Length: 117
Ligand SMILES: Nc1nc2c(c(=O)[nH]1)N=C([C@H](O)[C@@H](O)CO)CN2
Image (cartoon, rainbow, N blue to C red):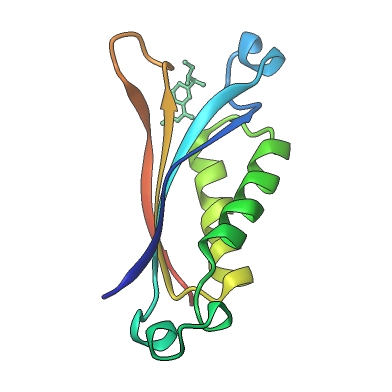
């Protein structure tokens, strides 16, 4: 299966379960893989025939930067649903990393894979 991907998309937002986290903004990093048949846009060489990674990135930044969830799990699910429903993607794999949240770890977070129903 072919994919359009977005790697290392860093977005600052309000996220976390602790009181001190409710008062600051923290960086999150998104790695996103979206199933998409590469042969369709390759046949026409037209941006209209592809899954536009710039448009998806813009929408994810807009949503995440205005969100204020406690858990990374909740945010990951919401972003995956936006990609499936608003961009007509059949399957999305999403890794949400919270760098610096745990001392000694480069990042922690979740990885999910969801399909359009
Ligand atoms: N599975 C999760 N574990 C934890 C989360 C989370 O969102 N999902 N969040 C926290 C805190 O907000 C943490 O990131 C602060 O350092 C702890 N565990």
